[in-house]
Image (cartoon, rainbow, N blue to C red; front, side, top):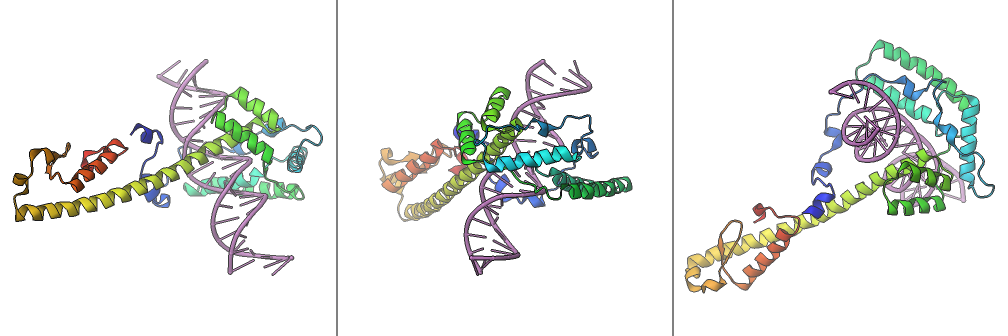
Length: 271
DNA sequence: GAGCGGGCACATCTTACCTCA
DNA sequence: GATGAGGTAAGATGTGCCCGC
């Protein structure tokens, strides 16, 4: 049971319920923070931390491209410092956020203004293809190895790994976050499959036991079987305290049931 | 106890890439 | 072979919560 609980799995809840049907929780911070999307010039830009002078030949072409894009961002003075074109992403989020929670005219105006800003920004970006970083095999392998050792990183480890990979610490952090989330998802799927199989097995077992019970009842009416059997062959279910006939098939049924009692399913109701 | 910052989980968006008709 | 649609993987972002200071 402990092993099972450690997975954090909640059977049925996550699988059977369509999330779309669940009421969307009210955003706890309805007031949208523009400063998060478009940091003021006085705020430090995170992308400035990117290494721009990697050792020649050691850096794959894709990374070179990314660096160029970043440089372009920095040089263009675009309002959003994200290297991956998150001005678009942030804008779409903003748009959703503003319109989802009851539209106020002021917000609409703000949106329109931002839309203009975005268009200008897009025009500025034209020619600078927004490239998404793809990790090289070597980088992925190193990250995987590191993840196998410890699924979370302390700041020192993060920094060291980032330097080793020629990535920003934030990118390493994000990779680990995504990796944890996707590992968990995968594990949940595996657990779900396992539980499905258990459920099928138990259903079969239950069906068979019902059948046996019917047969025993029929036997009982035909002849008082309890009176004929030696006491040693009678067995009693420890949970419901019912006496069962001690023939071989019944004993095996209890043995099989015991398998599940000792496993994750220990609820007496299973009897 | 309140405030703040950092880290994390989680939901979601976005882009790259693959498959297939 | 070229191409577009659809699906999937994975990098990135936004937000809320928790915890330590």
